[in-house]
Each structure stands twice: as structure tokens, then as C-alpha cells.
Length: 124
Image 1 (cartoon, rainbow, N blue to C red):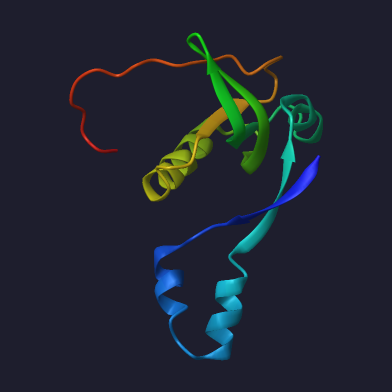
Image 2: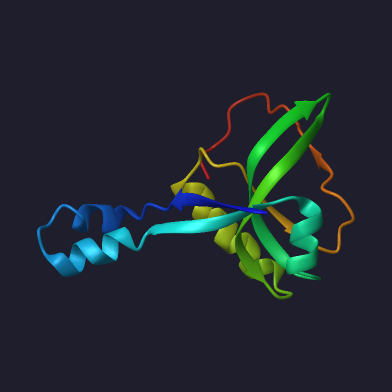
């Protein structure tokens, strides 16, 4: 495991960062967080039998499978997949560039299949 700085931007917080108030600046710098980069085996040990939202840090595609070598846990939910999916949707709307997944740690391996979407689809 290694520690990696991750910046989470909140639209309202970013706007507040423009001010000169020391309290606001302190709140803004608090949005810089450190996350631990792990493998799937390490995630399963740290978060047993839980729903987690993970972000792929180092990943590639082999055939139709997405291979994720390094991940970081963005959020965890004991046994409530509905809350996990709602949180995923919130994060995905704000940060479409991030490669996020909702998975349960009872899975022996991450078996993520890539599907090519053809056609027009509405924004989420």
C-alpha cells in the first residue's frame, strides 16, 4: 500500500476559495486528502464483506476485460448497496473523468467487462 494525494473539488467550496478569509482558505485546503493506493486483495482485507466505491488508479484493457492493478477506496458502505449506488451517481455526475466502480468485497476478483456503447444516450 502507498499513500497518494487526491484532490476532491466541490463546486461551492472552490468558489469560496477565492475569498481572502483565513477560515475559508483553511476549509478549502481540507479538500486535499490522502488516499491509500491498494490492490484488490488488500481492499478485501481492509473492508471485508462491504460495498465499496473504488477508483482505478492504474488500469488497462485486455480484450473486453478491464484490468485494475491499483485502486483507492473512495467510500464504503456496510451492507447498503442502494446508498453505495446513489453515492456513485453523485460522484460520477461531478467527476466524469474518474474511473469509479461500485463493488462488494466478497467478490474473489474484480471481473469488469467493458462494453462499447453505440448510439446516443442522455446525460446521467
